[in-house]
Amino acid sequence: MTNANNWKLNTKVVKIEHEDGNHASIPPIYQSTTFKAKNMDEMGQYDYTRSGNPTRTTLQEHLAKIIGCETVWAVNSGMSALDIIARLIKPGEHVVAGDDLYGGTQRLLTFLNTNGGANVSHIDLTNLDLVKKTITKDTAVVFLESPTNPLIKVVDLKSIADYAHSMNPNALVVFDNTMMTPLLMKPLELGADIQYESATKYLNGHHDIMAGIIATNSEDLAKRLFFVINSIGSGLAPFDSWLLLRGLKTLSLRLERQQSNALKLATWLQGQGLKVRYPGLKDHPQYELHHSQCKGDGAVLSFETGDLKTSEKIIAEVELYAITVSFGAVNSLISLPCKMSHAAIDPKVRAERDFPEDLIRICVGIEDVDDLIDDLNNALKKAGVVKN
Ligand SMILES: *Cc1c(COP(=O)(O)O)cnc(C)c1O
Image 1 (cartoon, rainbow, N blue to C red):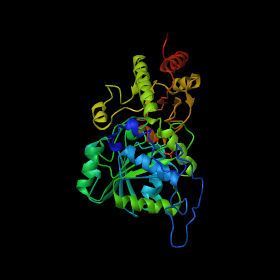
Image 2: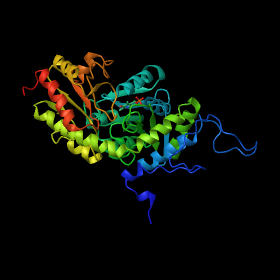
Image 3: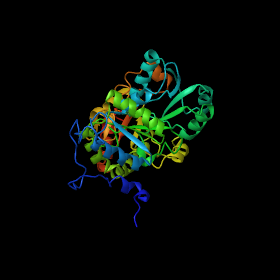
Image 4: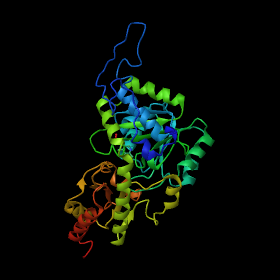
């Protein structure tokens, strides 16, 4: 007897369960905003797509199986997921967050801090002593993300979640799992109350939709989150839900190749004498911590060349890597964070946070790794970083 609950994750991502009267082998798209009632006394499960849609439900239930949690809500972007969660904060409440967060997260939390009345402390979450000094019995929410990017700093989720809950049992520990995906990290099992992800990245994997997901095991939180989603209308659209279901089927296959390519590329770059940041490299300062909470290393890495002009030259010379923000797509991407994703952060603040201006970020795709290395090698040669 097979037992669907015991299937391995690699199987679960492919096996989408759905009900459809015509026995379509893949879930159909319910591209409809309204659903008819039989009569005034018998309203069906669905009435209006803002409140619920069968394609979105199929996606949410599929994700809940992959994550191994009670409830998942699919919404229209990663930032929208954060906004929905942030609406649980009451004016003036104390919030603790990292100082090396995703730029959009930083922007929204800063907005809340100045306009919405939340009182946000941004700290280096890799410093546990500082974390313990900052989290108090009045801390309502802690926002975490690991590994951060592009600095690839690892945050100890379990220790911070345990500490926050010991200070305030009602504190909400919220974890952004975009970089690792449910296949490599299980934040809810490590103590997070809410896990959210930008599904725009690995979950979808093809850079063709924006989406976000929010996961929790708490019935109460699930209800409060749904209230916000339904009130503001941020549920994921049917067509985008359908595309995300399609993308998810190859998640484990894509990640497997992306991670093996990333490790080879990181090792090769290191062999060229460059300072490389990737949690899969044994000399990453938090290698042990990362592997105590994750099953893999993801496919985002960064390296320094020692000089901004050299980095710009490398980026100008590569042919295979697209120069773009974001990550998680099947094709490889390259960027200069200080001029792109992190340009909005004051250069002084970047310097304070030891953010190298010459840092190049690479998000590794599924191409043949020999081509990825050759292309980068040519660019490094033209930029004078390597000689042969
Ligand atoms: C992209 C990203 C987000 C925001 O998600 P969107 O889908 O772009 O709104 C949040 N957190 C991390 C870590 C991200 O990389």
